[in-house]
Length: 75
Image 1 (cartoon, one colour):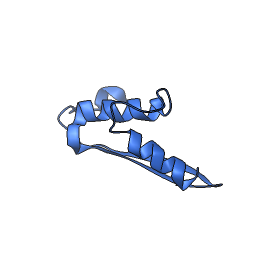
Image 2: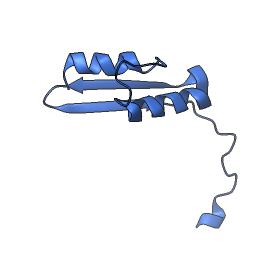
Image 3: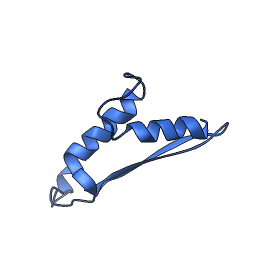
Image 4: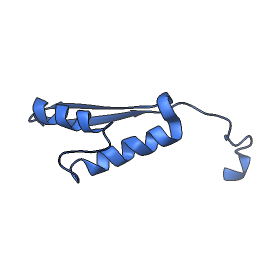
């Protein structure tokens, strides 16, 4: 993806209104849902190298409050 296209996608993530509604809706939807759940404790980063590919990294806070104490019943 070109640098210009990547910049355009990143710029639309926090906007409520886009000049091209419907574009980037998947990435924007994921980003908004993450912010609703985790607020500022998460991040979504997009890196791209034209001709090679694009990588999306989502960082979430670790929460072990819901971990199962005894895994023996899964064996």
